[in-house]
Amino acid sequence: MVGVVGGTKPALPPADDRDPDTTSVAVPLMVQDIGTVQDLAGRWAERRERAAEERRVTLALREAILPEPGASIDLPYARIAVRYVPAGRASSLGGDWYDAASLPDGRMFLAVGDVSGHGLPAIAEMAQLRHALLGLSMTGACPGRLLTWLNTLVLTRLDDTTATAVCGHFDPATRLFTWAQAGHPAPILVRRGGARQLGAPRGVVLGATSSLPYGVADVRLEPGDLLLMFTDGLVERRSRDIGAGVSLILEAAAATGLGTDLDTGLSTGLDAGLDRLLEAIGGPNPEDDTCLLAVAVTEEGPLRP
Image: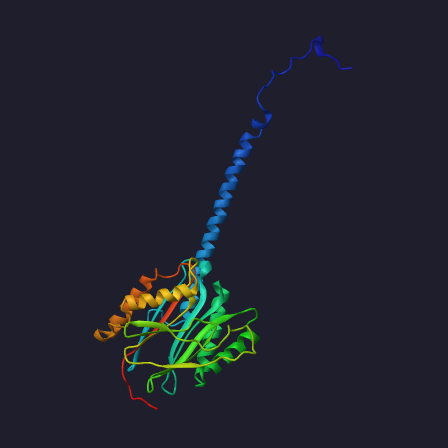
């Protein structure tokens, strides 16, 4: 039995017709939502900053490994120019690389390669392969043998890594370019206003198998010829495959007169020609690195049998 103080029943509070779910918790939920948005914004800003820092580190590391991308090499018999444009996004920065070095016997060693993957791991593996191939080239061994040795390195020291490469020797005395490839697009030869892709010798991707040999091919270059070595970032896009991209390069090389204006000024002509070529195919690839190594033959030179 419940007693009543003073004999009077206490008055009840007035009825509240408002929805209790929207009164007692409305303000706390609003504050919680604001806090969540602010937290997400903060985390997003941190991720953007980390991505920007990773890009800066990756670019700095690659610049320390590779020759100066805009540098040109002037030789008595040729001029070599490079166009190297990194991908637009940090997550797309890849392991593309190139090399051009004089050998002790007077020949020129030329190479372009691409390591699978992106980011710092690909850059680190690229550094190992580039330096290894450059060191091996000093032996004077043929390009097929060089790729065989490089493939052994990938299989035994770089787990779960694959890479492509094309490398060769240009002999100024004979104007002979001897080359080999490992799953890589073949070079393009521009001659007298026309362009064609060289027929590729056999060669599988580095890191795929040790049972298949690497073949060797050669082509005799002429004064005025232009040889283009490149990575797939130059020709491949999401909207087109490599074959279509190569066809576009061949058409653009002829349409832009690439190689035909070298006599009037080799330095200006080659640099301007490469810029026109990149513009004609839609500019650099925003989703992958773009590497283009061009060799312009300038002199007849003493031919050797």
